[in-house]
Length: 371
Image (tube, rainbow, N blue to C red; front, side, top):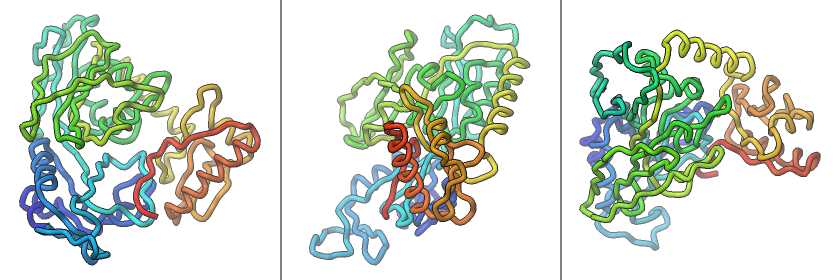
């Protein structure tokens, strides 16, 4: 679509793009249109274009149209569906692919300020300033505002360089900050809710930018919220974090950036803790096979992987999908799995665990697309 190519550059717009290239499971059908967006400015331009025009899917191709004929079977609607994805590490795309526009948001700007709101470091457009003064008070809090497209691994490295502690648990979680906020990702007894101050997001329901505040933190930035289409009503919402869940799973939204509250720490101790967590992951998880990380949510009163193991399901396969022999909580792609194989295995595991223990387990992986 020429308008999108003009906004983003032709290389960032792909048609009938296999989603298997963009998910850690390495499965999934084609996205009608797949775009990569590296800034809030470009994202808003794309969304404005989609919002202000009518589209029809004709012969598997989306076209901008002036009118819409509901009687034509190939035309699927006046507005183009939008799907937001991150790094695809907690995502399972069905074999039928995704209709409409898929947006991969990769903006990764960041800034660091101290409790006096003094800017310590800022990164824009691949530039980088000096790291934190090592003489700063170790009891002082620092506030890191980071675009949602940054990977957890890159942020962990930046924080290590700046001797900031509190994010070590999340550094090895695959994916982006936006995905970690969306899922309230956690490990080793900590979750994102424990360090989040606020999150800026775009509500696709009414195209306003809003700020969700985590009320467990007293510190709040004075943030200017601007509506991108001149609608003046701005709402503040609590994050409403739950275990492995956030408010963003209940609304149609694009997470733009988040602010984390961290502490000054000892660089060598931070590095050692990150290495310890990395070694634990390597020893206990099937990192050598395509997966979406932990497939199932932990139960409120049980450990899901333990129930799967005790149901003798380790190594059980359907097609190319297998319950990992290394960690029962992981379903892996042994090399030739389809999304249907994985979904069938997920359902089989849930059924067998319920039969044996009377416990209902839920998948943690996000499943989208057409059958």
